[in-house]
Length: 395
Ligand code: PLP
Image (cartoon, rainbow, N blue to C red; front, top):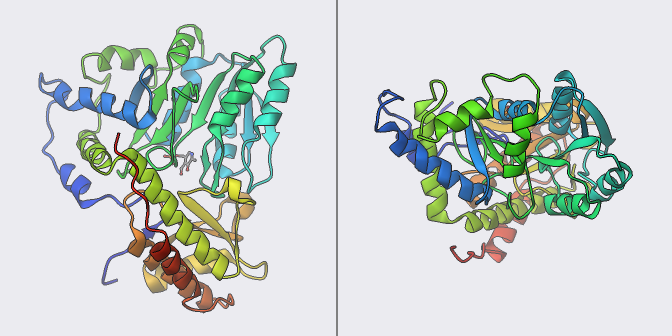
């Protein structure tokens, strides 16, 4: 199709020109004396994105799923008890992984469209007097339903229970887009990937690890090899990798981190919140509802929109794709056919979002959903005009 494709899935996100160009590099020797000049600053700069001074960041050549796995097998032993909340496809897949890796998973089932319930976690941890539970997991941003959970409240609940379990957080669709504070929130393992807020192609599994988690890795007995923290720590200390790293992605990361620095992390959070406000104004004007049940669950990086029950969201997505050159996110598992998703994270501005809203609006009208053309776009335009994003002070 002529013109440019509108990529509005919640990852992979648009790769900015600057980053794309930075990745066009000749291959080089990843054992050369010069290579650490690229890598050592990357590790330091990523710590700023995680807001950790004490922790260590790892970059695995994998997607976010690989970073999930590395978090588990480095810090836990077979049969260890893990408390995990399920309220969407990604929190489900993380549980599935933990079970397949041989951990004893206690599942907190939450309604899809809601998120982590710290009060329930506190109650369970208080009852676990002998500290059998070794880890608590929380999906910061459930990309399948557009739900953001309060990680600071999870930490508070764990502290109130006086429980020493590790806190694992899935920050795949939040890191670099929603505020994330590894040290302040006492997050021990924060898992992410390159293809969302970091504005890169998929291919880097990113992990922020606390000193407590590094200490746990010394005694954990799960088998690991490719994802072994120890091998990474030894090689990374001098700026190298235990295997061949994906060079273009590392150069791309250097550029995307520069872009983040230029805009300012806090400004990026404000921008995401502003763009999300416009999307939610459009959803309301269409007479539809987000899958997220209450405002406290609303995600500023992705909105899952529930279509009326007599319609199939798959048709909206396929019409948007084939007729308007627009990629919307599909509903997954429990919400397949019931929702379509608009990803609003990464390198985006108001007019780009308005384009996606226009396409979604036309696709819905084409399949017979009774939306008034212009209603959602108009509501978002009014929102954007009335509420220009307030720039945060640069740190
Ligand atoms: N967790 C969340 C919240 C996600 O959104 C995704 C992917 O979209 C994943 C985990 C899995 O990451 P990946 O596809 O990079 O392996």
